[in-house]
Image 1 (cartoon, one colour):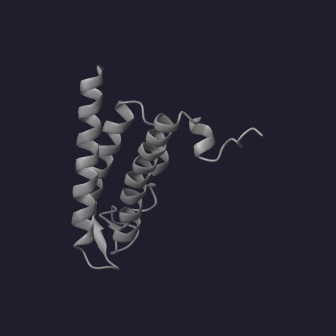
Image 2: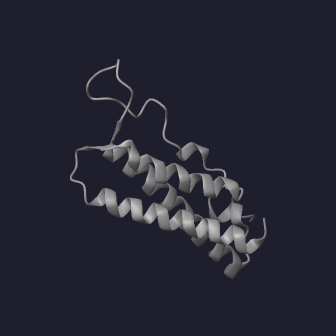
Image 3: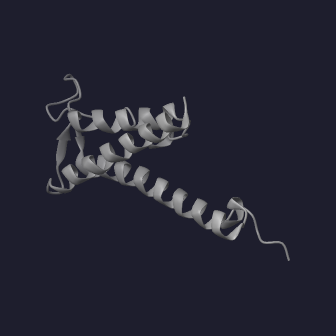
Length: 122
């Protein structure tokens, strides 16, 4: 995959995530949403995985979707707040990652030190 395709997939994922967050913002809390809201989230994560991002921890756990009519029925909804938290977490992660990378590029400081994994040498 070339750099242009990688950038395009990343932009598509972020556009999908931002749109999903806006849609979830419009739904009052607390509430549930249908699994059709999960599909674009998973597709956005698939785009990010395809470009080499390690984002599996942000995926929706299999036990989050449920059916309000009981266990014998297939899951068809998810708690809005749980989905919203995952969408926000992915967006925040990449905003933080970009800010840290920008700061590392500007200052020449080691990326590991900027995120707190390495103490400055004295």
